[in-house]
Amino acid sequence: MQDTDYVIEMRKLTKKYKERFAVKELDIKVPRGKIYGLLGRNGAGKTTIMRMMLNLAVPTEGEILLFGESIHKNKYKMYHKVGSLIEAPGFYGNLTGEQNLKILAKLRGTHKKESMKDALEIVGLEKESNKIFADYSLGMKQRLGIAAAIMHEPKLLILDEPINGLDPVGIVLIRNYLERLCHETGTTIFISSHIISEIEQIADVIGILHDGEMVEEATMETLHKRNRQYVEFVVSDSYKACLILEEIFHIKDYCVNGQNSIQLFQSFEIRADINQVFVENEIKVFSIHLSEQKLEDYFKDLIGGEKIG
Ligand code: ATP
Image (cartoon, rainbow, N blue to C red):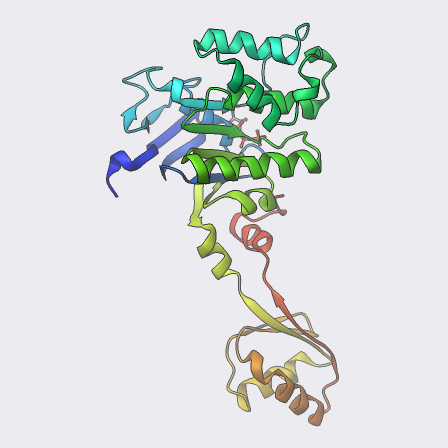
């Protein structure tokens, strides 16, 4: 792939606040028409990256290219092709949703009545468009922010935690829309979240950020393949059971959790035989079941501490 095929390219992108790295030497490339999901816990550096992409913060080192051009050399040149929702959307509280969008459209020089109406409809706000913004619920404010980001039909959408404050119906609505937008019009989407299940459902590629550094970057396909299946035996004596696994069945790929649980990562097809030999050797078998290591657990192992999401 040629470098110009990337809509987003970050090269050694770094941001320091005093002596502390908020973002450290990031190299991210996003091809046209893909959804890149940035996943990280609070304070991981997601917003800082997006602020730098929008020229709202200056990198300490490194650079960002959008549509193949450096945003530092060509300040603001490419921003008519970009839509963004970052932090709390700033709207006038005393104006209606529609009036707010009109002002934004005029400022951007892209006033098209149809696209504004379409955007309101897409986010499910068409009936509420004449309501004063201050009277909007949190979710409605967030939807208006998304409408503002998409109404000029950008080629790149940068969305910082877009589902914050949305109810389950709103989440599905926005998720379906973003998927359609990406697949039908080739729009590139850069989206952040701290909720694994949300990113998992939408992203083509996922980047896991921890303390400003990329700890893993992979396609969703690869991540799902990595989710290992295993058979768990809950037994009365795991020590004795392990001896049988190794000496009789020559199984090495397993792990023991405490005194009673054994996770087997191979030979699923002979679990009934294993069970029979355990019983013949006076090991009580309380349960056997096939499970899958969840993506959530994988991330927990990766970044330590509590689960994200
Ligand atoms: P959240 O999910 O909570 O929004 P985030 O992943 O977006 O988190 P950032 O807001 O990018 O994280 O913050 C990354 C780090 O940089 C944090 O430690 C934060 O305290 C620090 N930081 C961000 N902005 C500033 C600033 N203007 N001055 C000093 N430190 C900052």
